[in-house]
Amino acid sequence: MKDKYEMLQLKNQLCFPIYAVSNLITRKYKPLLDELDLTYTQYIVMMVLWEQGQANEKLLCETLGLKSNTVTPLLKKLQGKGYIEKSKDAGDERNLAITLTDTGIALRDKALCVPECIAKEFPITAEEATALYQILYKILNNEKENEP
Amino acid sequence: MKDKYEMLQLKNQLCFPIYAVSNLITRKYKPLLDELDLTYTQYIVMMVLWEQGQANEKLLCETLGLKSNTVTPLLKKLQGKGYIEKSKDAGDERNLAITLTDTGIALRDKALCVPECIAKEFPITAEEATALYQILYKILNNEKENEP
DNA sequence: AATTATTATATCGCGTGCGATATAATTTGT
DNA sequence: ACAAATTATATCGCACGCGATATAATAATT
Image (cartoon, rainbow over all chains, first blue to last red; front, side, top):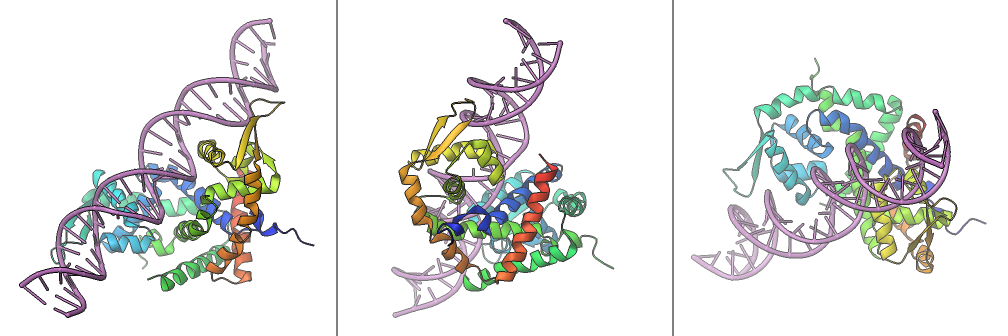
């Protein structure tokens, strides 16, 4: 007969390795991002801005799955570093128009090496990466559908 | 020709969905763990103690992949809640002997429903869960081997 | 035996991440 | 038109998570 508490064991939980790998990733990124004077969260904000050119806070929150109480102070930091600028949207003054400064744009080239440096740190095959990617996005997309 | 910045796009990065799912997990656990007066990190500490009966701080740090500067204050909180007790190891006074109180032991039964409640929140198949589990532990185990 | 190195735990400061709440701008309902 | 609801952003307080560092206990070295 099985232990009544079996499912409460760490090794039988899927959530724990996700949590542990997530922490590990942040630690791996740190030395690379230190050179750009960015934290991991600031880095993914910059990634959105590099790609979109411009964004408001709501778009950033939705894209990154974060709340305004995380993103607002983060944008203040990025502004303090001179990477972004904030201005009120002309049409709807509730919206922030967040744009990159020249320094922020230039930072993109310095960041080019980060993805491949990180990839080297993780010993998984292309197939495993794809499987991981698909399962994780299945979870994230399901969440988006059910909580609009 | 490919965009030079292609790999810097959020959708081409594996790290981001891990980070996003990890945050999502914490949010999903919160209402369940609120009933036990535990945070997610406190919960995984309790899981180790429920299973091992007893532990020192070093073991907890290694098992959970955390540093003492995270675990020390956490143990202080759990002690304040009356779930654990700390005493000096008789043999080596550097070691903390961390044990469960009766309240801490009793909490295990209240936690029994948590794993299945959480499982219901995530729409993945058993095969996907297994694949996820194996890939994540491959990453974690590789890390343990290379950084002792 | 005394100095040095190592080990286990603790403290400090910073940057998230979030629930709750506040504020300002816009939209809706009547 | 104007009060009420909604929306976008901001503020507050708490709990991590970690790099750097400190402290106390033990082990290693000479």
